[in-house]
Amino acid sequence: MSSLQTSSLLFPSTTLKSAISVPKIPSIRLPIIPKPQNSSNLVDKLKFNHGNRRTLPQKNEIFINPKSPNSNQTLQLYAILEAVAERIEMHQNVAVQRDNWNKLLLNSTNMIILSATTMAGVASTSTGDSSHLALNLSSTLLFTAATGMLLIINKIQPSQLAEEQRNATRLFKQLYKRIETTLATLDHNNRSAVSVNAIMEKVFALDKAFPLPLLGKMIDKFPSKFEAPIWWTKSETRREGNGNGNGNGWNEELESELREIARVIRGKDSEDYMKLGNIALKVNKILAVSGPLLTGIAAVGSVFAGNGSWGGIVAATMGALACTVNTLEHGGQVGMVVEMYRNCAGFFELMEETIESTLEESDVERRENGEMFEMNLSLQLGSSLSELRNLARKSSVARRNGSEVDEFASKLF
Image (cartoon, rainbow, N blue to C red):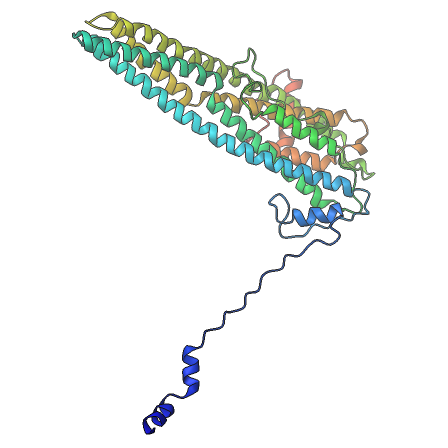
């Protein structure tokens, strides 16, 4: 009994209970996802479903008055904004893909041509019948495969395709920022008229100028005449604004200045890039024809290679030249250079049309503000306002003297 009492003193019941008690499971609070109020309302649905999308602002909540007469127009602009964001991502991905095409196809064709050239050279020195036949057959098949690959590669011009998508990405980003600025700066309750159709026409013009698919819609890489791409609309070149009743920033001096700048752009910048583009296009045509022609001749020569014949020498020589031509064309990205000149020529054509269409509007109150127009032109050409005015004076003096100004309007290209 005494031992039992002693044990009960040493190990009380509370200690025993605590030793065998099961720990409590901590309570877990699940987050409650708020539901949009008045889910039947189209505006609330837009705010709830698209609040975390990357195409809409994430920091500031969007408030749209459903009673506003322009609320439907606002929703349309946001829909266009999402479509433009999707196109930006697609063109970025396609540009990376086609740049990889250029690198992989260049290395692959060069390795095939060099392997065939080596086989043809060895076959020309071989004396055994079995080895001679094997080397001839292998080099002929490789040269034939290289000829077919070069015909396809030179037709699609992967470097030019990649440059097209890079230009499309840049122009779609400009449009995206323009729509964002329109939505951010204009009051939703008292919104001035914004042409949704004009913005949609701009999207479709970009789609037509820089198509994504290859089959059926690919831009001709070897046109008979070098032409600049058109990615703008007529409504875009005529920028309208709200007049302030004080001439809207326009005067005769500014109009004459802009006419002289347009004349310089047409006579110097556009003409210079059109000449460079024509030269680059002709060089690209020569290289595109020379590569498959050389490998085709090498394929025929490799059939007769062996026992010191001229066939092996012809095949090895033509193969080396074909590898050099292929490296110059696609390693030097001549197609990309052609597209770069096309894009620059298109930019200057857009500047010229914008100036001319603005000056054609006789009512200055319906034009864009003159000071703002001059500032935008200065930023796009990369020249300060003083440089543009000096250029206009030089052009006017040179025109009266029957000569041309030697200075270019753009400082960026």
